[in-house]
Length: 403
Ligand code: PLP
Image 1 (cartoon, protein in one colour):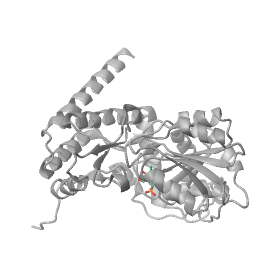
Image 2 (cartoon, rainbow, N blue to C red):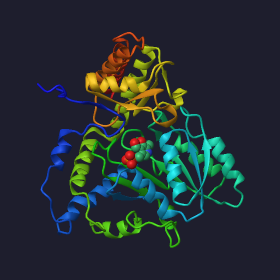
Image 3 (cartoon, helix red, strand yellow):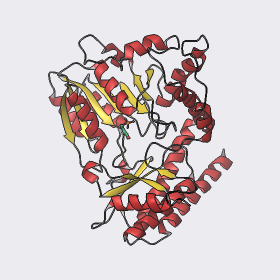
Image 4 (cartoon, rainbow, N blue to C red):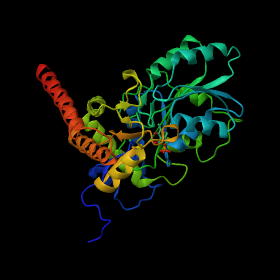
């Protein structure tokens, strides 16, 4: 018998890539086809319309790139901003850091508003900076809706209000990589100008699609002299997409998978998907409380329903918990990144999962923590999450009965 074989399913609880439903895997298992055939638009055209519902937009223009989320970050900025333009970004975790770095490396002047990791965007500070920008030099405000590195969700509507209060015309760019399709996201209501996401989280697909949604105002900012780009050109995509085609060879199996993913979301109902993520997030947080550990998120208003980042007690290394969980229990947990490396581990609870799956991850995390020497009571987190899940289920049953 091979000593390295890990029987049973791998418990994939990193906050993306997430579990891919078998239906999606089967939908992607296709023979290649001619992406210039007369039939092809039947697959592609509905995808844009259906994605608009996921972004909650009527007017927004959706574009699908064969890339990961990082490509969508790049497309969002390079198409709509010019060299030397100022952008304001709230930084409170590794992904908000990386997006700001990407902006800087493209030649933008990046004004960073650092917030403590474990908190999120501070609309008051943003309003102050925007009001102080009398010459309207800031052309973009960048916010990561759900900071995957720390398990923090920011209030995008409040950031929009900050822009409005300052009467500032800057475009609002939102990273929804670990929120869109899992946590309520409202492109139109929140006055977002460019939102981006990737395929490997709430959309339950492999990594490989970078999705951009742009407002009319953002499309109006596309002009000669903007930052250099070619592959990630929005105009090329929009032109070809209008008839159902792409400016280059599309990632065919991914598009078939996307269609299936959208069917799955429709069958559950988008609002029910959000409610399920909230319910799962509450269960994960109940477990952490029962362990007597702290979340990285400093206050309930920052709690993320897609990822829970758990601080390990002083003297322990989160990387050991993750390593043991993986090697001994076939459980993949998320690592602490950058500033919080070793200080925490993360449980991703987004995409295609249910209570019992998450209970498995909580049980595995308990065993791995105990193996590392962290003194938590075995079963305490599982019991707390079970209680939370049962309460949630009872409330749902009552609600359905009342309807
Ligand atoms: N933004 C957020 C919030 C993320 O969580 C990630 C990746 O996990 C990215 C951006 C980068 O996306 P990708 O790794 O798909 O390029």
